[in-house]
Length: 374
Image (cartoon, rainbow, N blue to C red):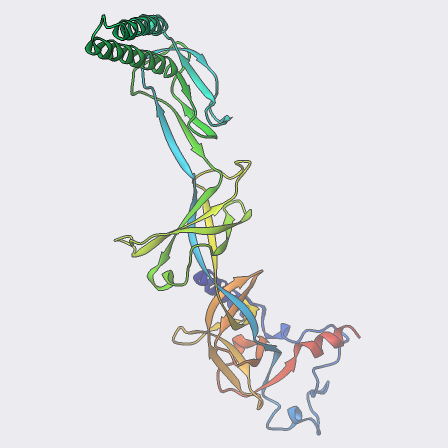
């Protein structure tokens, strides 16, 4: 982001130089000249008209004061599903019914497909009949044991046979239940491989369900800023289409990427209508401590001969000062910078034509605006 701001500033400097210095004080055909300069360019009383002042360049200036600014970390990230699961068939069978289509929102436990039961229903009924038989044998063994006709061992054997029959029923009914493939949780049916009439083997992929609510936004934070982030922090997320949403930090990785030396950070964003999809590019802004800074137009940034970015101002004597600055962030077409005095008189027009330590005639842009409205 800072690189883009710097490029914009350099482009603005070039455009300003191309337009020419004549535009600096253009106020209208019938406007009065800047304060302290006569129409003939001469004068006797104002300081600007003294012989030693006549050749000084004039610049527009504006006095600005530092303001509170919320520092923030800007991360590049992407949207991720809260969870994704691939559903596989647990038994073999032919697809006899399709209950949900791709892209459809499904509820937890909703049926997706049904497989043919084949002879599984008959096996389940056979197992239930065997349970009834074993139950009768167990009851008889208990009655005869109480009369002293059967031993306790016979009762134990009858009970074991009954428990075995009951287990067979459970297995048969489970096999029947597995012929119906259901969604394990609510979400979007992202894909469905099984089609009507297809034969599905046990273990074969049937469908993929993704849960997008809440949505996860993952970015990478540098080692330098890792200590500034806490779980529970609120962040702003701007999506590739321009939409902005708010989320909370829910995860901060403890292991750095070996190649980039950055740590994963995740935010959770409510997404009840599944409007935000997976794998969208996102810009994450996480707030830091509040600081004092100046808010100026990016076009007012200048570059020194050795490539240092800064802002030109004038002191009380009308001398140009080059102030090296650091860009802290951007907001609504302007940039927040540090490095200026608490109150500074910055050059707003003409900074391309003057250098540090040069004497100039500063003209407040508010005075020019007032003359144009008269």
